[in-house]
Length: 209
Image (cartoon, rainbow, N blue to C red; front, side, top):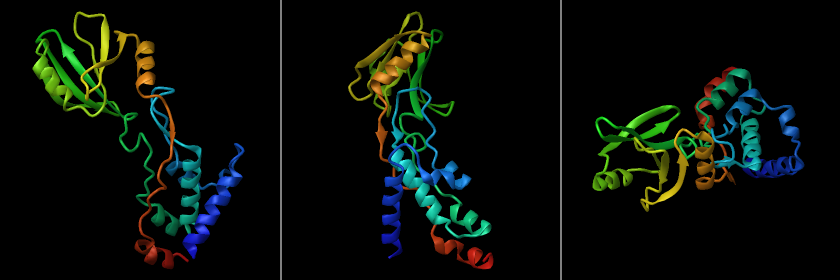
């Protein structure tokens, strides 16, 4: 019965938020606002983001989770809550593959980067096509390659091993244009947030009533 009431309530909330303003936001708990934020990808106009309906459902779910709960109880109920957004979930907006190349030694290191941190996947000798292909096969996303002594960088599809876009080296505007072509931004439906089981907070909530 409670689940049915929640579903009806969410539908009502979505209907009330359909014209650009949302009554839910006026009384939104700051913790729910923080949980239900979809951090925009670094490149404007590229990579997927959660739809406005998904964000509204997240906020409604969060507020329902802590409705009438005390401060201690609500803190317990929201502990480890998780809203899986395209970037938070490790999608292409969060991860980026690139080759870090050096003329001496004549080697490129295939790096998987996330949040400014990069880790080595493999490396190849410049000019060795077999090693290069083997590295591409280990990539999850398209990979960026800027060879020493050249003025152009290429972005390769790791499935087909073909160049899908090129840009002038050190020209970030062209680079971001390539990213927008490869990963055009779309609004996608994101799953409702995950909360810890209510029973895990039963003792805390009963003591704080």
